[in-house]
Length: 219
Length: 219
DNA sequence: TTTTAAGTTTAAGCTTGCTTAACTTTGCAT
DNA sequence: ATGCAAAGTTAAGCAAGCTTAAACTTAAAA
Image (tube, rainbow over all chains, first blue to last red; front, side, top):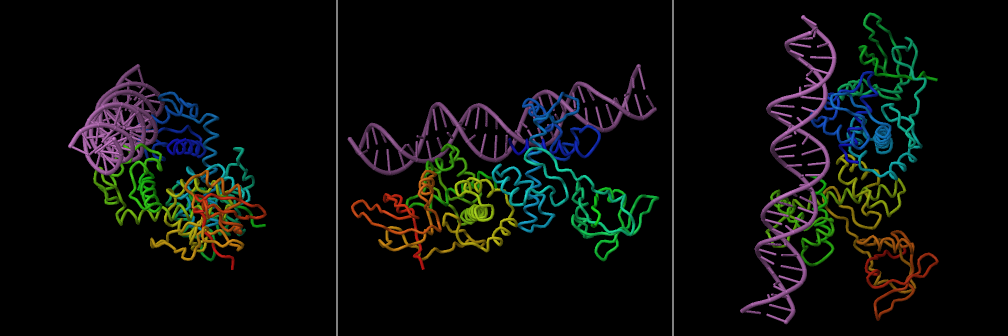
């Protein structure tokens, strides 16, 4: 498995996971920062290898074999992210791009040792689930959407969905990250924005940002 | 810097370090497991970039710029080796090939964090010196060659020069690794072989093997 | 001094993963 | 139903880092 293959399968899995609709080649091209011609090319090659279900001009999907591989790569990525943050105290901001490279180059053995070292963790530093060796995903069963939080109550941030680096930076600037305690000040129903208290600061979040945050009730 | 470049510079540095004579292209080809045509090709490219001093049919050497880069790569390699062994408890035998890949893919920032985590270590798990960020090499000043050890006295293994995997395996089978305590039983002057006591076992080493071991006196 | 073996270089070619440019297909809007 | 924009494909080509085969250089032995 090459790096290009790894990245293709991973991107296809994640895009599929992020939306209801089928994944379009252009999306994949944008995500991987390659041309759509390169996407077609790769799709054809991976279809030959039985990792992607694909017929020209039709949507593409991972086969079970492809999904299995994608989950392995995502496992590597998220284990590295957590390891770099927890053990080497790396900035949450650098952790992603570092993991993006390391995920392709560590042996199974090393990944398993990292897994053990971290105590078979279920979630990465962004709150994303870490696929297990078996390929199963830990359930974040009773996470609460921020929309459903009650004003006045205090919660812990459990998960933040990061798709755009700017969004990450924004949350970072306001001190919003997994593990952070926050309180809902008020919900503005007219546009579904919310006002929160994070640390000592009050923050106003638009609907789009609110939807990226998931909570656990405090106690 | 590509992986191929990294490996070329590293191999050239190490070969130069291991012997008195000039490095031959064939040696480099053997070490890197590529054809000698590929070596010529790479030498020409790196000469253009000012990293290698080279004229066709003549010996090649690192320029100061090339040596600086080589030392950086060796630093990465040895830091990874030590980290994998000390922190993740990886088998000394796997540590090398793992580091061989990781050395090309960690950021400066990550390597520095590993360095700090390990307390700015001077030697890797084989006892080889870890180049500092500045490019300087820690001196293993008063290491004793095994040849010069006195029968009856007890020492600690400080460094083992591993160039061939079989040699590594051999030492591993007899429990000889850095940090191991050993005693010299007898020296056989006629062929310069030696008999040692390692743990509870007696071991007979040929001259070639003896020369690979360096010691610190115990206390 | 000539021959020869070892070592090196050149030339041509391959694979992977890209690119751009030109083309085709699809499906939505009219 | 058709015509057009968006998406997708094909074709040709490039760079890196290899390969093999053939040609060449060097240094040292005969």
